[in-house]
Length: 454
Ligand code: HEM
Image (cartoon, rainbow, N blue to C red; front, top):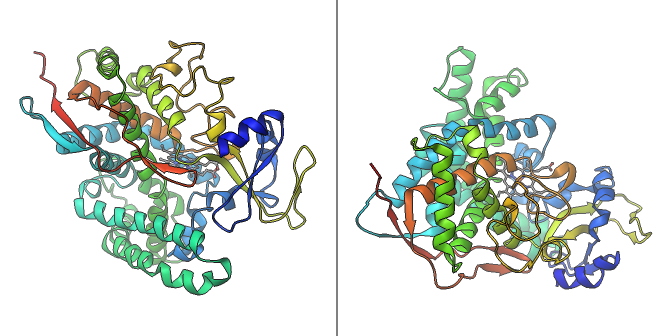
């Protein structure tokens, strides 16, 4: 539907209306050349924040700090998110340790593992090594509590937004949101609040909390002296940490699971894995898996295959979703008047499948973006544009993509270097609702640790 409209109308420079299952008022999908105009609109006319909260219900926010901070990119938060990539040494150490734990190190026997579940563990541990450091990132009960909370926040939010009529939301929304609040309390009272109190105590006494930096340290340092007392500060810090956890977990797990499914179900999967392995070996030159920034930059094939998989497997078919909040509505560059309350976006589904932009767009060409395949120029995963939208575009383009790109390329390199994986006969289908999709969660793959060459 979004692709059809793109080819029929957007390619002629025209917007079109697409169904919206939220409140049944259609979304307006505009041609990509309107993206610059969208990006230049002030927040009080065309709101990015409202667009990002499209799936979420305000009744599921358990802490005012969550509502302010979720996906909200004020300058300081964005700078910190971008700075996350400097923690690659810790994150990479966690990737290697976590993979060893979930896929094992048996060089003789093959092991059958659930791809999605094991990738979730590796992503959650690696991301939390950067967010909270050790030992929390390895605490299985903490990770379970976190997952239950993040899942219920997303599912109850979608349930309320999409199934409950707006007029009934103040009553039914509150009722349906109570499991989220319960899980939030479990996460915060059980883990994040004690952690925040401990961190504040250590920070104020001038002691270093751990042997490593973390996102939580930066947040605490930035918030220091902004609160009347330590308890209020700990409560705010715990709320910010809970909100930061929404961004990386599912998005990154979807990305690495889809990448591996695309590779394993390709008829050339052996060759692709061998090329990734050779690249990783060449980058490290025989050293163990201690990846430096320079080593990561050499992983051009790994970067390309993730970029290609993200092009083909969008989490949502729309991009740059913005809501008209100007009371009088807003005129598009072609003069079309859009009333207050309507969402405007781009058709990522159409753009990513446009043969004018990508040669044989329906084909999975793993090294398309390494400048080795067809007419495509080399492009890094982090590079965004109106022809590549998995991380959005413009001022609000995802600031976490630098961290994600580094984490996922290392994950892929460590997997290719350290494991043999059996191929799949066909590409397992994911789940889709409307124009949203997720990879399947039940695919089992057979893995075996590669023999160490002495
Ligand atoms: C594969 C993983 C990820 C994907 C596919 C992804 C995708 C996106 C997309 C599509 C947007 C919306 C951009 C727009 O409205 O135009 C976004 C925004 C955002 N993302 Fe990500 N993201 C990922 C990981 C992360 C991570 C790891 C973090 C933080 C550590 C993060 C933090 C944010 C923030 C703060 C925003 C809001 C930016 C703003 O409004 O200015 N994301 N992301």
